[in-house]
Amino acid sequence: MTIKFDLYPEGKHKAMTFSYDDGREYDLRLARIFDFSGIKGTFHLNASFLGDGKHLTADEVKTALAAHEVSCHTYTHPFPTAIPPEMLTEEIMTDRRVLEKICGYPIRGMSYPYGDYNDAVIAQLKMLGMRYSRTTKATEKFSLPADFMLWHPTCHHSNPHLFELLEKFRKTTTKLALFYIWGHSYEFPRDDNWALIEKFCTAAADDPDVWYATNIEIYDYVMALRALSFSADCTMVYNPTATDVWISADGAPVRIAAGATVHLNT
Ligand SMILES: [Zn+2]
Image (cartoon, rainbow, N blue to C red; front, side, top):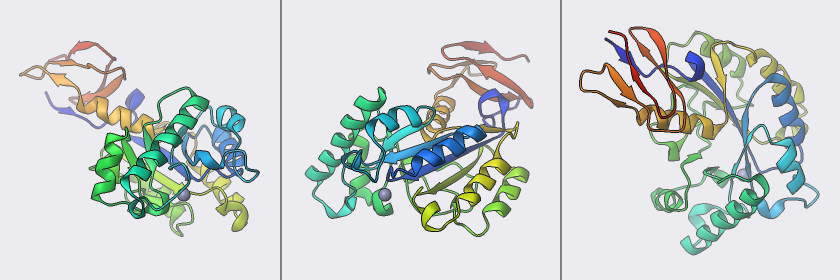
């Protein structure tokens, strides 16, 4: 029997996620566009700016972003490599504490302010509970990251090839393909191009082979896939996680429910 890790939830072959930084008030309009299209995103917020007139209020974070993931972006948006580790700890933990109180779940991911990081910062962030962190380096590819602490996106929404990339994504044979788009919502009014993201979301929505997910949902799914335990002859598989996963067995999708042991037909 040939077993492959090439499926997302419900046996879909591809996933799409969006990642927006800084928590400006324009996130409200962006979240509405996502909600209208059935698209999921992650909003990386600096908690010190909440409710200052230019950023989301705590209430808006709780209600308008309820269908999405709220994630860390540090408390005051410093360059992470340019501050003492003691301050970085405060930046992450204070951001987490405030956002977790608003959202009611542990904040486990982030994006690097200014795309700034180094090995020491990454090691420290892992100790502070960060499971993934998004960079600003576009790959124009649809691969999952080798290291989730160096999660390079496919592209920024202003990429001139954005719609060509969507066409490529439709045809891609990359296993567990992921189209990852990032940006800042304030860029839409600044560049007068709300129509761009509306058009893109409309074009990208409703693909039955695409899982529309938040950043952390993708992380959790991949970790659950990696956590599967097989019998020596690979006819039995145990899923010790809290996430249902799908695998292919001789080309057919098989659901391995959370906590279940499944006997694969031979
Ligand atoms: Zn930022």
